[in-house]
Length: 303
Image (cartoon, rainbow, N blue to C red; front, top):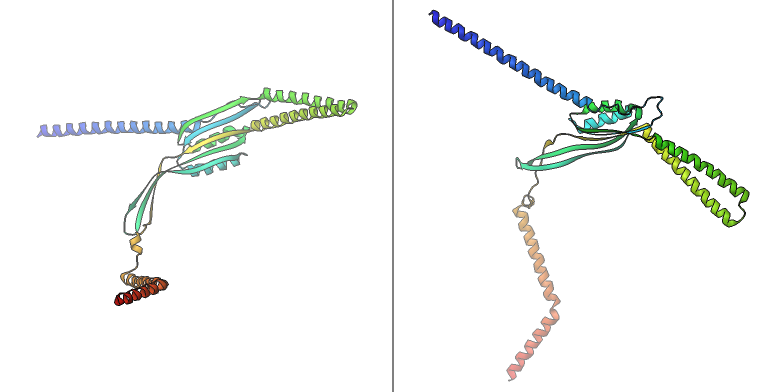
């Protein structure tokens, strides 16, 4: 009896130890899974953050900063609205958006006499181009990061155009000085019409070059002030089920037997009328045939 009691106690202790080990392993696995999920979320939210080429207030360098990001979201439509609202909130604007659904497959299954189940597999994506103040680029990118479910890639560029701006300004200054000299030469020395026309043409070319430099500088300054972000959003393939009315066969729209009989009698009567009219139209030929037959018969009797 004591042996049985000892054996039962030993079994109970071993079972308790095994259960504790399994519970500990499960706890470790749960913590590992949580850590993996948490690290993935942190990676998605921080990987696209960048302080690339952030200008200091007293810096003479001027950067054109652009960002190109592709990522998966839970819902493209909701993320699109969130991004557009964030863009407006931080003083930016949307220059392009192309939200579209692409049907991958569509199956129709008849489930009753008058109902059909339509199963549609489709993907939703959106390409967005936004422009935000250069000082708000990193803030907007961090806000966009909240929508990321999986990051495909992010490319951030910063092109230093300070020398290009300086070159345009110097060229514009030289062009302005040349314009003044040409205008002075026309006023003081332009006597012959050919000389005047040539000088005016030169002046027009100088003004055009000066205007182009001005426009180029304005364009560069605009790109410096407002950074461009290009986004590619997509989501997992979605399946949509919809019950629609079944299309009836053409036989279902045929009239009943009584109506078909009445229609057949009418059609027969119309055909009979047509035949009668046809023979009436041939009355001259019929009359000639009858006359010929009577003459032929009379001629045979004389013979």
